[in-house]
Length: 329
Image (cartoon, rainbow, N blue to C red):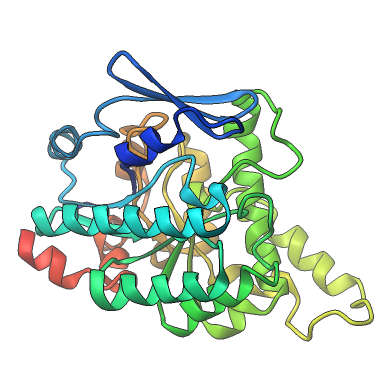
């Protein structure tokens, strides 16, 4: 069985809400769907299957994917800020829970969080776990420009870690680089921002709480720079006043990554660096080339047991998907 932990479904209601805004992000209706304008040079066309559950299921069946863990695509509700962000996050979570319940064994959900008010965001996180039954949380690499160790953001992530909830760390438009061309933004800035977010969380001590953090897109640049980061976190003395966390490089063996990548060599490198126990299958459907990660995984020189671990076993364990998977079996 294949469990796709990185698969997107947009809220049509949310895209409709973005129409007519005076500032980015905005959305405009066009033939077949919407175009979302996320940054000055970043506009994304949205059609089926990202707007249609039925089209999503058809693509899953064609790819041999039994269960997809759905998450909202760009832009997320957090970019609205304040109470509006919190309200839309809750609405999107309600929509996702309804979809998962209507298709037992086919869908689980990464909840959205608004981060408008820390207390309200924590309450929404508890509601998603205790009432809606969502699998974990999609957290963006920055929250509308705020880094993840910001005092309004970090307490929420500490709460998620204390609850044992999985976090899928997904890239967002990096602060200060909003005008990058689309290829540079998506191809490089996104994974780089994810990598910086992981290092900020390590430096803030979040990893001492034992969180389950799955960094999207093969962990960004972290596997490639693992030795360099480790060397420099030990080679330089800490500055006065820094938090008493272990050096950031010491935590890189604790992250998980999804397999969204487009070359065999990067996948093999992550496998060699992290091992099969820290890789989870993801396709990024329908962005990019969603069939490629699965094809590359089929060519990975690992054992059959390890391949099944990557395809489904790790997701079942970390996201507590046994009930959902059993319903589809």
